Image (cartoon, rainbow, N blue to C red; front, side, top):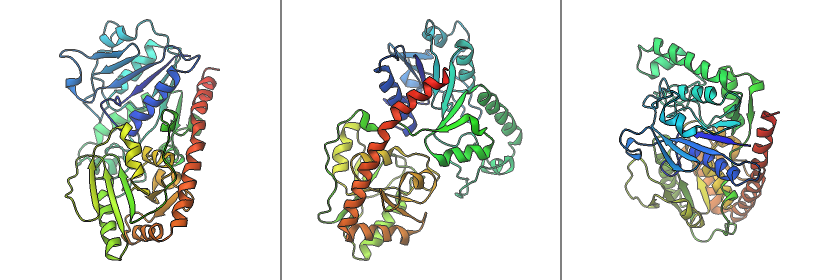
Length: 399
């Protein structure tokens, strides 16, 4: 079986969860017997990653980087899709049976339609990682006002975009309709995400839930379960941006310390937000995948405070793999992935007192921390089933 994976970015240049999910599938299946000829096609993160005048760059025998789509509203395509174009020539001679898309953002809707023309017998599968279908405003179901959105309507979407764009929204909706017409099946890493797309109008027969592949397929875990000694250390991991709620975490740590809780927050990652060093907070900067184990070894638990409906944050899988429970808001896919008092603790979104209460519980109850750590490790082992589940799904598509 030959599968072409299409991603909105390459993990060598873009470290988002969707890019990593696509890459892990490609890496796993191209090494698996019976899956010869798999390929990975990804959008470049910036123009300087491609030679001047080039639309396609071969990163290896089965990997290609393409010029990034400049328009996230209409999802246009930035490469020549004629039969004599660079991309068509790069893929010539291939016989992909499945084209597994992990986004159309940065790739472009027209490119997906071209792949269908070039490989008419191939089945098209799309894994949904966010809400770009029902949400034109950055795909988070988070309005410009900061309010959570249930799916929006043309009037609400127009307000988020600043007004006067109803005609463009209608064109975009038709383009998305055309795209979804050629997709044979949709996959979601969470039931929450599936429900949002069902509400948007997707046929229930055309959408299924399969979790993303875990990191433990490729790494050996040598970290023991966590036992608290000294102050409670919680860790933030990932990109720092306005939607991750880092300010909220810092405030919760300050409030907990004011109440006499011995706690330290370790921030791992870089991004657009600027924060100065403050008491009880350590900023450790960016980290590479091979540094993750050492960073996890320094914390007792992982904390999240995202203000939007995160679907299936990869940091939860990573925390569980290292036996670290997760403190997260009772919101979206986070509430689905964190089993309260089994693999972590859920707090009321946006409620500092609720978050501080969870911190106090972990700080003052070592037995609870050990129980949650064991639960996290047990949950991680269950996700090893995801690779054979993907294979079974691929095989069912070709029946």
